[in-house]
Length: 252
Image (cartoon, rainbow, N blue to C red; front, side, top):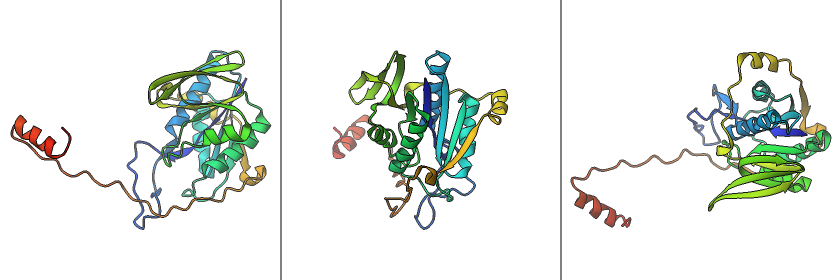
């Protein structure tokens, strides 16, 4: 079985995000970029399935700017077999919206004919949490979102999902879409030999026009602002004073 894994280039999660002075967006100048953490988990899960013998080939796909080549090479160094880069923007500040991404992925799925698509549940830059669900709708495939455990059994995938009430286990017929949650696994570090090997692995470059998909934004960012800072706390002299303060605040 072939597995397709979409990956996105985002600001590294260790970096403190800065908002532009005019509030038009996030400042990306000289900022470290890396693979979206949830996508990294999806790549790791695909590799583990391959190690178990359930998967034969892993294809990673990134849709965005040309610099996303670095992100794809990281996935190849982890253990993916080949990569596809769809250049859909020249400006690193342009975010390709979920519907356009899903449409391009649907075209790639038609070409590649994978038995499974594993994606991160959301990207940490826009938190849309929509691409996997939209791709499922476009393809008419079953979906299992927020996966914390995946097991392939014949022509179905047994997936444990994280829901508000705890854990839910479902069986979804393949081909299907699975979106990875945080507790699905812990991604491996790429070894130096694998990093060197990744440079020789195939990476095909396409454009959004090759798939006949319009990536023009449907949403307009009106304003971007940093979260309000927390107000300073106060010290209390006794337990009684603490209880009184909590009562005044309506906590108890």
